[in-house]
Length: 318
Image (cartoon, rainbow, N blue to C red; front, side, top):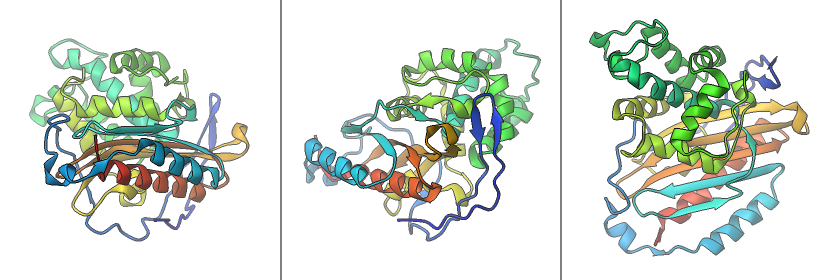
């Protein structure tokens, strides 16, 4: 479903080698029955598959690949997608290892990295002199009240100033790189000073999402729930993206990123990552795009690819 995009304000400024932009996207027509909210933990590939999966057809990966390539061949720019269903174990990728400018989806990595670093501090070690308030539950995360406010602004509102502050707290690119090794991420290259100029892949973004959804993650459960909770309460005008693939009654947690990239042919980078959970499925989805002539074109590509891939996984069985 295409949404009408309104550029209410543009404030683009160079930070290192990158550009950041503040754009608001109108919420447009609502997807009836789709719920933005914290997603539930998964019980693994065998959990909750239900009768719907039992009746599904075998997964036609080759057919889906042809369909996705045909669609992208008609679209301006480039794109890549990675998606997996934690309930059925099915997954699909197309150009999933491709290089894409991260834009604001990098903010999830920043917060995950910072929380991972602070877990030791939360158990009693000092970390940078930040005060903790057990009464407010902050001891579980190791974040100060100020950092929690910044985290909310960064994820829910995509505030760039908040991201700058937390990127510094996380140790900039080097700190995030160290955390990403723990997360098993191999394709993401955090820019040393400007987080928005980092590069990533859809495959790596699904690895990051897996660390938010899995009990095997090095991030403790309180941290995982906190991050997904913020992603499940993004402001309405930023609820586009992978939510296009959700069906009525399913819950969505997501983070989007968008920025003009003038050294990439004057096109737009438009990305969306997140989790869609329902009775029989638990999808982790990442769609990245680049070189789109407009933000609107990039959003349309991201949403259509999300819908194509998730629908195919939803209606299939291993």
